[in-house]
Amino acid sequence: MAAPDVDIRSTSPATLAVTGALVFDSAAHALKQADELLKKTPHDTLDLAGVTATDSAGLACVLAVLATARRQGGKLRVVNMPASLNALARVCEVGPLLA
Image 1 (cartoon, one colour):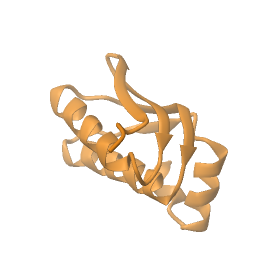
Image 2: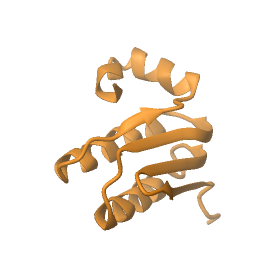
Image 3: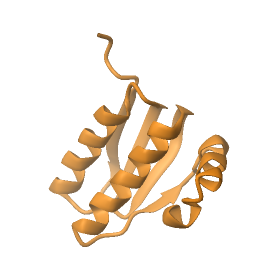
Image 4: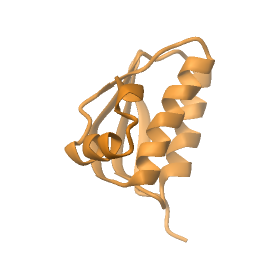
């Protein structure tokens, strides 16, 4: 099985940056990475500028990362959301959860 084509890193003390395809095949890997980073240090921004492709699993992953941050007492602000992910969030009526 090929390695997932997604990566989440702390690019500054408070930003998680996602790069690559946030899709069905990579969403679980991305969520695991985000969970590990959020356990180490609080973050306040989830930057999606590097996302090259996304689908409903990618949207679910983003929502799960936001929920994890909330459970740990924080709040992530989503920035640079791809238009396709924004459109999917509107169709699924979860846009307010990303605000």
